[in-house]
Length: 246
Image (cartoon, rainbow, N blue to C red; front, side, top):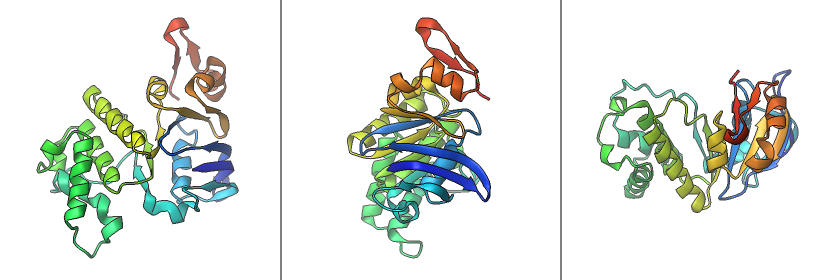
């Protein structure tokens, strides 16, 4: 994925200006910034859901909308009703619908892909359980498995670690590490600076425009964080930096 001085707007209202950077195969990029910084907007633009008004975004060598079949997406708040009587396996199998269509029935290969995805997130043993009986962290892992089942070349995750327990966070990180080892490019929107240092190769630091794009050590500095967060970053010596969420 290539961002070339990309600016994004909703109608006449600018949302994000002049973002540049590359997301390479097998690499993980964190989108870091305060609430309202444009992180979700950038993800929507990569999906071709929000127009790029200047500059460009190229996804897997194509325009965003044309590349969508090869892009997986885990939204911040899924619309799937936890009270709906659907099993974990059925939710994950939904990730195969772009391959098989909504008319044809999923075949053996689709079911195998769904089972493999559930195994990747550590929930194969819950395949027959009703989705709504899972914890919040487990549901997030199932939604990641749904995206993995499509076998995307690029995976976008919008705040995937919000409200998840430590066990589920570790399982999510392990699954993402397995994907990047196989060559999938990953973009994660997150407020967690420690996670960006731990699990991401590069960081795109945003707040309506780009402050930095590069390795965590070069982008998550006290100076750049204070600039991006409006002075809300506080240096804690050897313990790193804490940023107050806006």
